[in-house]
Structure formats: C-alpha cells, structure tokens
Image (cartoon, rainbow, N blue to C red; front, top):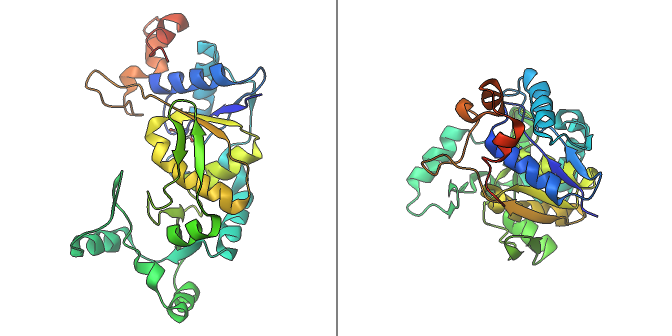
Length: 276
Ligand code: GLU
C-alpha cells in the first residue's frame, strides 16, 4: 500500500512540471492513496486564486486527487510543537543574523563551507555564549531557528533512505549545513513542515523532483530526531525547457491553463510530458 501526495505551492499556475509530478504521484499510489496538499506556509507569496486553479487543472488533466488534506497554513500549531521538540533536544539554536550579516561573514572567510546549493551558514550564532544567547532571546525580535547539524547527527547516528530511482542513499547530515528550520517571519520552513505533514498524512512514498534530493538528507535526520516513520522516496526527473532549464512559475507559456486556452486536449498536454 503506497500513499503518495502531490504538494504544490499556490504561488502560481500549475505548469508541465507540476503535471508530471502529479502524474508520478498518481501512478505510484495504491488505489485511493493519492493525496493533494497545498504547501502554503509562505503566505507572503501565496495567492488565493491559485488553490482553485490548481484543483481545476488537475481535474481537467484527469489527475484529481483521491483526497485533499489540510493545507500547511492550517497546521501551524503542529509545526510549532515540532520546533519545540527540536529545541528541547537542543538540535536547533536561535540565529539572530540578518541575510546581509551572513553574506558579509561568508565573504570574510577564506574557505567558507559549501553545499550543493552554494555557501553554507558559517555557524556564527552556534558559537554564542549561553548568556549572550539568553540575552538576545529576551531582547531581540523573533529569531530564526537553525539545525545544529553536528549535534543532530550525534543524537541519531548513521541513517539512510530508500529511493526508487536512486537506490539506498547514506545520509550526509551536514550536506546543507546548519540550515534554517524556522524562519523569523513564518515560524517554520519547508523542511520542518513537510516532514511533520508527510508523517501526519500517513505518506509512505514521497514523490518529488530530484532537485530536492539534497533536502531529503535533512528530512531523514528530522524524522529520526522526532521519532517519525521513514517513508520511501522517488525523486523523479525534472521537466525542462528547450535550454535544459527547469520550468518555473514564471513560465506562463507552459502553464496548463495556457495549453487549455490554446485549445489543446488533456491527452495532448499529457503527451508533452517525459515518459518516466
Ligand atoms: N512544494 C514543493 C514544490 O511545489 C514540493 C515539495 C515536495 O514535494 O516535498 O515544488
């Protein structure tokens, strides 16, 4: 029995990349086990009309979910609870740095640590003395909370995850460094929310684009810290444009809506997607 989900962010129209992701989720699910969940924690970028547009486009493509689960914005209490648990384990620490301060610190370093997506957080606030940290927590505004990757790794020991395309993958806990698990402005992050929500929704197979493979190292670590079950994964290929770039929300020319309005049938749109 595989329960999967398609988890778009309602920040734009669905495009061919979403159609592919939804089709993979549908194909891999057992009957009745294909769910839709809106990832809308970044309320500054969400627009109300995109929820309905996504549901409609999915239905038009013949990829309507078996069930929709509550959007992430309705799960804020749960996300706060998960953060509190990570705090009690001291697997996270508060970070008071602004983006500009982080950039300045990185440019001062002769060899800043790098991850697959660029320079990693140099650890400035991890090194704060306990008194200074307590003082800033009291007097400063809401901090961000960062993973203490080294501490987290020692708490849980070696880990791996199974991916249907990539095989068994050994977790590298430091791959993304001390990344932000709770942003100052929204109190959570994609990483923290997706781990909690997939567990709460009973997702047994997470299907998503292979650009998120590095993030899964962190997700597996969080699952182990929180005592949540480890789902199986399938990181699928990305749909790209003719220049090999992955499609983005701004590519309106490849939105499902654009093809519908141009008179294409759903079958014709699905035929534009890669084969696996
Ligand atoms: N919300 C993400 C996206 O739209 C999907 C992330 C996931 O499936 O874990 O790309």
